Length: 235
Figure 1 (cartoon, rainbow, N blue to C red):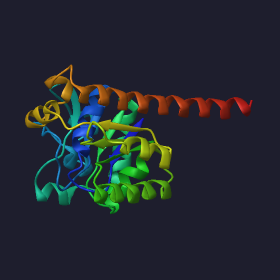
Figure 2: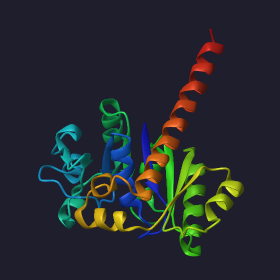
Figure 3: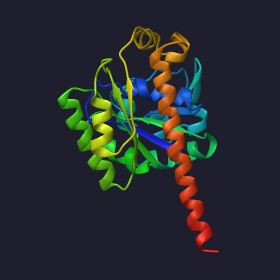
Figure 4: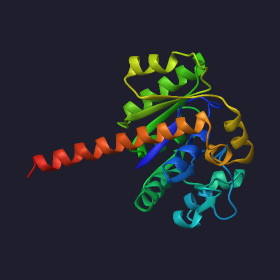
């Protein structure tokens, strides 16, 4: 299953969510933010090399701590050499090997976001309670709908303990919403480039990432059930 993590606005926690979701799903995190990457950097070939035809996707996946990552280079030369048209094929190959492929994306609504959204089985919207971030997330939702990619869930970051925003989003859009509080565990994990599970296994943030992973798995199971029903109807 390919899960594209997006939200329109920068700085809302897409990369952090990508890394933690990949860890909780035991999948692979893919850094498709080809110009301004934020996921941890590996030592070997990266997605720039893969999209330029210099490396195979599986050869560029590394264990970084407790999570598999297809990282992205930091050079302008690498970004220019990368062919965005190769991303769908790359994700498809990874999907055949790993059960869950979690794709980090850049900010905005340009083609470098549209391609990974169109290539995904589902989209995970990431936002914060601030109005500009919410508006950008809603625009990204419209992009996903235009590309026929369903939105599986919303990750609402930096939520206060008494906020009713998660319930309001679920009521208005009918999309499961997981509230992830700002916490010392998240900050500590970000400092080391590790998932929260490595920083604090008792944290509320980890419980919410686990909940988010469960929501994605339930969406996947519903999709399989629908496909099986269609297949059985044709017999």
